[in-house]
Image (cartoon, rainbow, N blue to C red):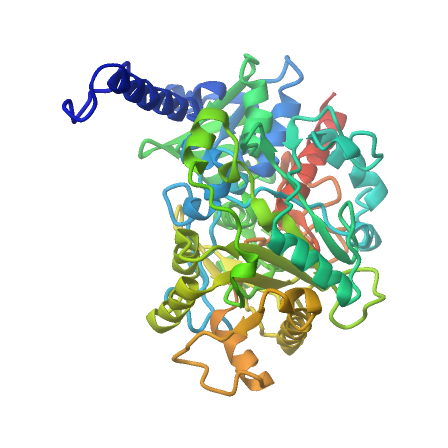
Length: 597
């Protein structure tokens, strides 16, 4: 668009008209600048033919796959093909504060799940949003950079995964990161030369400061960096006011390498084997099926859902799951773990907590990449608590926080994503017209309930059974988390803003809201995914029957195939899983280089 036509020629005349049109042109040009496609490798999908051959084929350009692609393409002698089922990221995905609006779009797989014990009051059950786009879920998530407690990685090592303790994974976190937070740049825990930008925006809002003071009053530590227990302000994967997804960090940085090839809208159905050796993949591009071959390795980085689905479609899994004799009998699709959260727990606040209006936030963003749209605001203040032992060394609950001013359109979008019933939605929206709402969402970090995943047929979405709350210990932990939040509300800091626990109307939970019976009902009907599924291709020694890959991420019993993504986690990390997935990509690519160089 070279110039804007004035639809109201009589409204403004002379200099005023020219200024107005120049403003519109500036906004339109800036919007076009948000389109990130030009920075990525070209799409060669239409040029791929049956029998095309590369050294390595990487299935999935998500958080791990993008890292693997970049690191392997550092060797100019290797030809790398990346196959991504989604498209290039949209301009909307660039705006950090619009992450809620990325879910349930064409850039989201929108997986349906089958639930028996939880999600009972949600219109479509628990919908698992996973990125179907370059960058995978790092392109549609909330931009939080959380690594997880070091003890969790030490536990991986203790389970027989040698080389996966905290001291061994920390260098790969640092290798990936280029932090812009000044106080971290000399820290031994952070990196400054990696591809992934992590940034920090200190919030001085009344609500954040109120919350920080209240947390102190209930005995919680306020930390400068990620704590084992306590509250802190997380880093965000944001660069210059725009999202820094894994694809932007890794693929865009390697766009000029002539040995890195990318095909979008290329969905892999299965791996091609010669006996037990991976030779290539069957891929659907433009509704056409072709075979593409790898001279060295096939690498599945398609994520916790797609990687096990592709393996099962390749006849790798348990006989009882596949209904036939498998090529290799492995627990593919088992050990499915996720964080379950309550996003329907709100605190009402009076006008004492009001924030200054930001009427020009759209103008500020489109002209300078500044303002509230350029960051994740108060959402970056999170807590790690242990509901059973205040002196524990590891948290069992993470608490997310989101501030909603009166009549915020974002809260309506949040309720749409959760899939609340009409009665509950109406009661929350009515409360939003009268009060400031503070969403305090506890998520269970060490779920005892374990789910399963089972393929239906080639290219169809699998049957996903999270089995949330199947183990009664999980609902007890969330009950304890609710009680912790009630104690926060009673602090002097919260009471100064008139804090009250909001009880929404529900067609399902009619008990007294002060009772455990009510909250058990609430949790069963309204708790939903925190979007951190892992574990379906579990890493472990061969002598552990439930393991799928070894500690170098090679699939047991097979040759020249690895799984490198969050599906390999033997236990779930106590925190967001995006940063660990990129670490896994960095570490996995190092294993490949060690073997082939």
